[in-house]
Structure formats: structure tokens, C-alpha cells
Amino acid sequence: MEHGRSKKIYEEAKKYIPGGVNSPVRAFKSVGLDPVFIESGKGSRVLDADGNSYIDFVCSWGPLILGHSPEYIYDGIEEIIRKGTSFGLPTETEVKMARLICEALPGMDMVRMVNSGTEATMSALRLARAYTGRDKIIKFEGCYHGHCDSLLVKAGSGALTLGVPTTPGVPQDVIKDTIVCRYNDTSSVEAAFSENAGGIAAVIVEPVAGNMGVVPPREGFLESLREITKRHGAILIFDEVITGFRLSYGSAQGLFKVEPDITCLGKIIGGGLPVGAYGGKREIMSMVSPLGSVYQAGTLSGNPLAMHMGMKTLEYLRDNPQVYGSIEDNAVRLEAGLNAIIDELSIDACVTRAKGMVCLFLGKGPMESHDDVIRCDTARYASYFREMLERGVIIPPAQFEGWFLSYAHTREDIEYAIKASRESLEIAFADIIKYRP
Image (cartoon, rainbow, N blue to C red; front, side, top):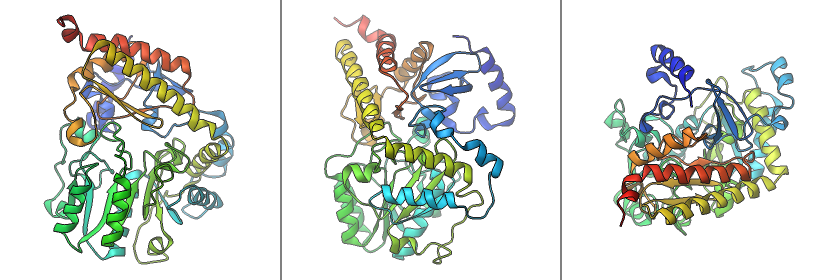
């Protein structure tokens, strides 16, 4: 494939944007390529600046559960634009959106709209600290909760990819109250509470870790977090920025039947526009200004465009439950196809799946924690990515990200991706396959 125009745009971008991109993983550094610049998307495909078409398994890193540019979501958007894109004053659409979210999520009585997942998590932690009167928080290795300072300790996703699990610029005083535990390890959480008796305000967790690939919770892990936090009077925060409305309409908390005290949302609830939200039990949310004294504000929070797109998306998901079945069917088919290739080629790789979330790890499984994931062969993954790109399939340009399937992906898309994966993995593992007796 030709990428001349993308390269030209990238050279221009580097003059004005750090690294030429506005989010690190887009730079394609971990896969040894320059990024491709996208012109448009429709259904399950994107078109780049050079006219190359790709089956897209990035889907904007999760928001596009219905695929690119679905007509039924855009219905009415021109009228919203003509009326006004932002007022800094309340609108009825915000109320409708809030009601939709609260009705869908078991752990949500009230919700506050913000503009990003990062804003949601930092606001949720402030609220948890105010509610409990404590300072310390627990997070887990490999879980990423946005780029606020106190959470950039052994983060996942881009931080893992770039090899800087704790970024420069974060003062030690900021992270001294952040305790890092092992994902899927209840004993590490029990130990942290024992060592910090009466001092832990909250435990924040991705119910399915989606920023170190896809790592599902062990049976009983989330239930144990609920029991431990209740016992110690701490707040349980589910970061459902990725899993929210993706695993099911009730999100991960509905699927696993574990109710957190506070939930953080983003991605899907904006229908492709910037958005975030945090909410939870009424007693806790009543502390948020102007009802309470915990201050948080945002000029564009709940803006009409994001609320309209999010509301249309959630209404479609609510009224069309077959969306989740279709996505999971394709995810199961993809998982089975990739596992068949792994068996056929006898390579060290494994596939994880949580409903419609899938990840191919180029490392020996099982993958249950950060320690397991970081043993993956990122050089082989880079080779695999490059071969897939040449075959017209865009997968995450980093080993530590999941594949996002959408309702727009067809069986033919999945079958082609499996075929392309077989060819690409054969090349990525050519040295081993060639000399195998």
C-alpha cells in the first residue's frame, strides 16, 4: 500500500504537534511505522489520506460500538448545530441523557457529565476522598484511569507501550497516597488495607482491564473488592470508560452483578464526541457542588452535540439488544479463528475475550495480570501489525490494547481478518516456524 500523503501530512504535523499526534499511541512508534492519517470512516471501514481502505478494529478506541457514521445516530444533528453547539447553560437534552444512564446502570442514582474519562476519574477520586475524609487510594498495575497525576503510577496502555509506567512531571508528594495492587489478586488488596488501616478512601478498578490488552477479572475478584471496601468503609469506583455500555447495556456492573459506589464513564456515551461522566449513590453524589461542597465544573460539560450523539447511541442500544449478541458472535468467531491459527502454527500466543472485547497476546498465557502481560513479544507484535496493515486490516498499534468490534463488522470482515492474521503471524514467527523440527 502507498502511504505517501500520510507521510507528508505527518512531516507537517511534527512541526506543530508534539510527536505529530495528539495522543501517543497514534504515533505507531511501538510498531515501527509512521502513522496513517484517516480521511473518513463508514461502517466497519476507514479510508486513509492515500485512499487505502481498512477493516477497522480500533474504532476510535471504543466509542464507535455502532460503527462509523451510522445514519440513525446522525439523525437530527444538523438541527442541533443550527440551534447552537454550546450555551454554558443547562438544556433538556442533558436531563434526558442523565436519566438514560441512571436507568441503565444498577449502581447509578445521580450522574454528573464531564468532558473526558480523565476528568471523570479525577473527579470521582476527589469525591471519594471528601466523602470518606481519607486520602489514600488503591489502583491496580496495568490499569489506566486517565492522565491525572495521582493515577500515573504503573499505568497501562500508552504508558506501557512507551516504557514509562510513571511519567516524569508527577511530584512524589502527589503519588505518595496512591497504593498499587496486583490486578486479580485479592490478597494484595487485603494486605494494603491492613497496612493502611482507616486511611484508604477508595479502590478504583477497570472491571475488565482494557489498557493492558484485555484481561478479564477472575471469578470472585470484583465481588471480593465489593466486600473488602464495604468492610473497611471505603468507596469502590468502577472505571467503566471502556466497558460502559460495551459489555452489555448494564455495563460491567450489570453483567457481573457487582454494584460500585461510583462509576466513571466515557467513550460510548458520547457517540463519537468528547465526553465523560461520573455518578453513583445519591448520598455520595449529593456532595457535588452546587448541591454539596465538592467543587467540579466544566464549560462544555453536557454540551448539546455530545449529549445528542450520546443519547441517540444509548437509545439505539437500549431498543436493539441484538447489537450485543451480534458483536459477541463475531468476537467468539474471531477468538476461535485466532486460537486455531495459534494451534496450527504452535506459537507462543493466546487470545483473551470479555464479551465483545478481544485481544491477541503474543506471549504464553494465561494473561491475568500486569506481570503476565509484560512478558509478551512486542517486536513480533510490531511485525504482525505491519503485515496486517498491508493486508488492509487496522488493529491496535500496540500490544497492550484490545480490539474493538462494532455492530457494523460483518462475518466477512471477521473471516478476512482471520485469514490475514494467519498470513501475518506466519511471517512474524517465520524464524521459529522455519527451523522447527
